[in-house]
Figure 1: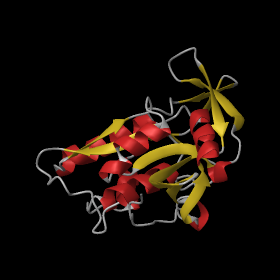
Figure 2 (figure 1 turned 120 degrees about the horizontal axis):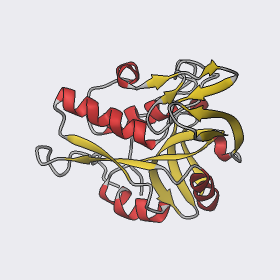
Figure 3 (figure 1 turned 180 degrees about the vertical axis):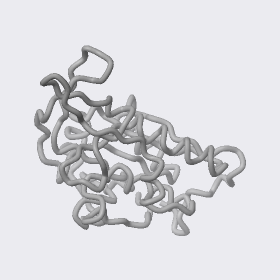
Figure 4 (figure 1 turned 60 degrees about the vertical axis):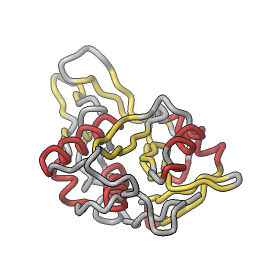
Length: 215
């Protein structure tokens, strides 16, 4: 089972832009005319700040923390990608909508979406390395502390085979790459099992997301 998706390397232009690059790969697979630079122009972003000896920052489910152009920045969670895709769709009057599906297991994502020709935005870690506690900050306007899990990464789940899942991995020119299923699922769980899909609305033909060869 494999969806043939256009590949985009995030390096060197977007060193922390894996979420945006993976999303654009999916949008281009859906035959939508959008590039990474345009997508990033819609992305809500906020940098960390210092105030009274405290590090303050936004919720990464609402804002990209830093900038996708900055190697020292962080990234964003599923909520940001859902909101960004849906704002683009509304402005351009595209017949799509993004939806978070983090409640589903990876096998369920494969059965529900890949089997229908729809790749899945999938949070895991860079090179499937272990995540570890990174910088902390106080969420602006609250008393809540947030700890960033380092090695956070977003890829596009495009297929499955015996023992492996297949990804379009934008990191460092990895291309279309297979990772062991158990390890991918473990890293995915470490990243809150975050996943996003893009659904068509009635105006788009039923076969709009299938490549000519099918799955």
